[in-house]
Length: 151
Image (cartoon, rainbow, N blue to C red):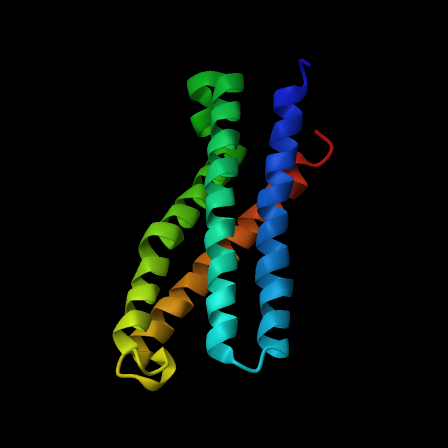
């Protein structure tokens, strides 16, 4: 029982980082390859990213709270705490900033696909920013897994 919080932390890290890698680099590319309707593929991918975002918020919050419970205020100076905090910040930025903005651009483009509308350039820019944020999360997550493996 005494190791339960540590085991939950390991599971939270696995779920969050594994989800980032599996959804972003396996499931979504396969979806776009297999689904001829790119608009449908984009909608499904978006739904997966939203669910993953909420998972990341839950896992990241737990991991920060756990580290804080272990180390107190000094946790905020620990590298792993800062990595998780950066991942969580990127998740929140994407979930509540970038994704809603992209959804609004899609809605404004209707009845056209956003890629065929006057909003195409703005959408591509925000999609690129979102992709960079996702890549940073994925790399930070890989670092987190490597640093916590076996501890």
